[in-house]
Image (cartoon, rainbow, N blue to C red; front, side, top):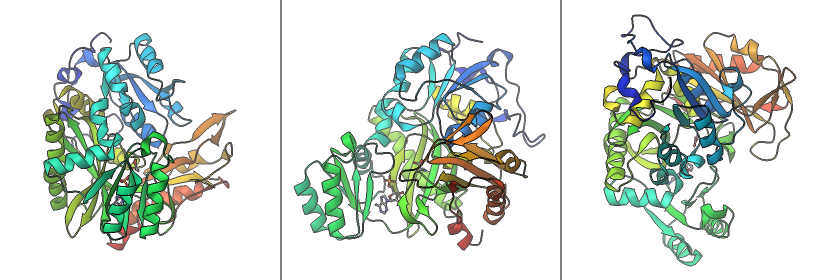
Length: 465
Ligand code: AMP
Ligand code: GLY
């Protein structure tokens, strides 16, 4: 069914909140809804190739509203549930051409770079609906300085900061403030643009590095901010330009080694919910951070539509914004999706169409925990092409789902093609149970060239949950 992309797709779904996915449906738990026949059979394209996009495809592909699911470019695991298209996420012309030729009804953008580059703007101008913010609103992730200024102007709690494009005033600012202090490249730097400097000398060196071109265009400007000593959590909300629907909280594990040691990575594991985000904390994050941001972006003429991911630091019971991302987290998405009982797809459409107030998503109480398996050497140099065995046997364990990141299937064998390779995800009644199930599955996988952290979930476990 095509030719309806100019209309509000979600308005054709009479009971958004009631639509359950085939996979996740819990009969009798809530109304199953009755999506009208005319919106069955949508062609949907997911853009990206990581574990996040596998988890999104896993959810979206189970929606009764979706007929054909494409993923550009996808990975070895995504190829089992979606049609892979050999177009990269930043090839905007290529993606646009594909959407036109295959009459794609809806595009879901996974990573940040195409958002900042204006993929959603180009698709929307071509009459193709897309999930994700336009370039002007993606500045919330694309420029840390923009977001800090927004916080200052609208009273959103965040660390005290300065913005600099010259080394001399930046160093004077550091000298006037005590270490530890945090130096951040302004633009997208693939998670590597932040230095938490323990000494003044380290902070000065980080300034020289960033302004000296280490992060290319991303470091022409820097933010220097106060070090916040607290507990970090990720918070996710869908936003439709005017209002926000909270999804869930999670905690990531950024450092490569057990006990949060070694260099930072894209994320070595996660779990959801984060116990530090109590119901009271949830309300504080919504009313002090998320909702004022949605209003601020609208007031700035940059209405925000899509997924808003707040990295927060909780200090003495108060949440402060560390950063925003304009997309789902990876690996956090891999622990949000298995907890969702409702169909995600109409909720995404509702965010695009500005009718999120009609959506009520239902969640499992269970904890989800994911362990990232990475190639030895990551986040530094690593070899590609090693074979991974027994993934299917691991997936047969109860409550275990494996989302692929850097994998390909070659001559019937699964091979590693990236740094982060698999996300071994399990559900359980507690963090301890989910953790035990995830590591049981990890131990079934035969991959001598891989490694993982052995302590995913430790922070929650120390709270006894
Ligand atoms: P960001 O990309 O801004 O989230 O920074 C990456 C990581 O650096 C965060 O996840 C925190 O662990 C740490 N970080 C960033 N800003 C601060 C801060 N002001 N105080 C302490 N840690 C920070
Ligand atoms: N897990 C961190 C991120 O997605 O940015």
